[in-house]
Length: 202
Image (cartoon, rainbow, N blue to C red; front, side, top):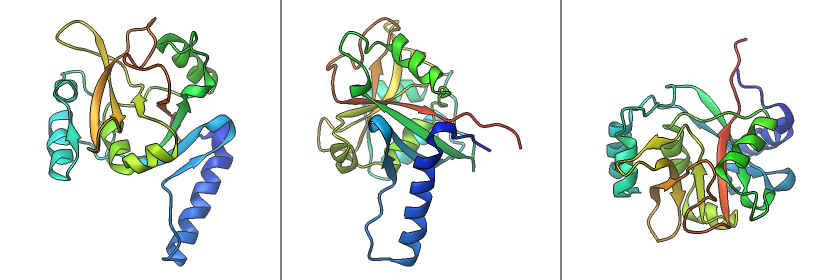
């Protein structure tokens, strides 16, 4: 099972919303919850897909993937999300960090302090399916960088998959996340950084 720890209250709220939605079909249901300090939580279910099949599946469902995202999805180091596993995602908003602090290294250290870990790369596509551009707009985020283990691109830069609403497409892109650089590389504000709650054996 996954130990949500300090985020358990957010998860309880989300589960309550799901229950109410099942019994009140007219109620609008949000797949995510916003909690303390703007921290966002949601759950996804692993599909077990490698990057190439996940790319093809996303496109078949009407999602857009950039050329660099396609390279990242097809990378030999891509780790899929375990099929059937419920994964608790925690998104740290950009507002938790000052402009000078918003480096990959500092964001990862903050996540570690909170007991969070790197998601498998396959979580990025799952979050893209769960969250629309409208949801990102509600969150006041332009993109969500999924903080998996970085994968090296053809130019030597380390990359991470990201959800973007920079255009009208429901898009999956890839961002440069070299350790000491500010992220994202084209804007320092209005981004979220996605980690997951570690799972432990019963």
